[in-house]
Length: 346
Image 1 (cartoon, helix red, strand yellow):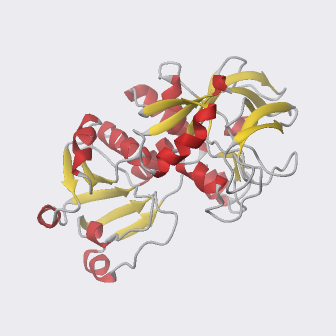
Image 2 (cartoon, rainbow, N blue to C red):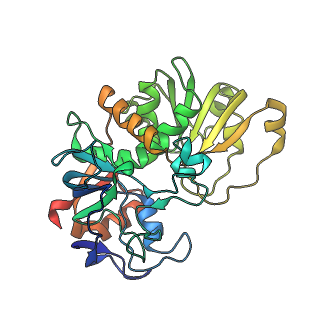
Image 3 (cartoon, rainbow, N blue to C red):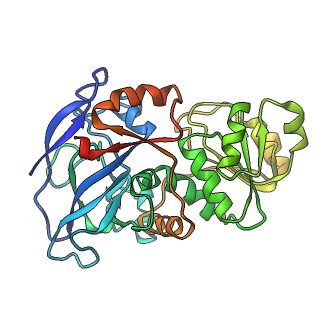
């Protein structure tokens, strides 16, 4: 089945229209007309081969919201017209220990990503949400509440679950002092979730200008990481740190903020970080950990939590033909806080 998409022809060329193939509907499949697709920084990394050689053409997009247009004969939980979402995965082995525990993101044979993975049905590569439609196995389709602002739901499928998952895994609760490091697509969601969980939330940033926005998002305090006196005063005071900085950086100053037995989780820097001083970790029994997205069950839990607490992303809407400009603006951190493509413009 043919559908129109936007694709990167190579690492150095702009994204442009391209007709792609989608598989015919299988018994366990859900066909979706895509209404909105969020723009993630990883879309840029993938399109430009910055995370290893890509196979072209690349059709990015893994923050997908749309309407069901058809279902396979084995699909009972979805109906035509339902509002649904698709995140970063469209398949996994479903048999390994991780998949058995609902942690498909850690599939031991490798989850099938929404784009850039081997397409086990058609061959070639999977194509993502910068397209008019997509067909996905029912096990990887999520229900989206009609109560939420639909266009602002899309980034929850990546930025949302990337921050929700570690907060839940490390048991953030009412009264915990939580620091969110970095205010961007991930950081702004981390603030919203931690506040909704009842935590005392501190935005930790290098930029004084972001303080007012952090408080608008719900942060109770702002800590400037460039203010040595304030950082020292805040030593050993945090129960948990969510580190959303997307590039290599020095994590040592943040380790000093943790209480004994507390954890800093890195969700942004998928690359080497600067050398870590083992002393503060050893003498405080502190931890530095990492976290990916969540599994399908947890992602549905996150979407339901958002419906209960009226949480969505702060978004700026664009048309599909504005995507190349949006890429450049993301690189310059010129977005508050997530671009979403109105796919009716394709």
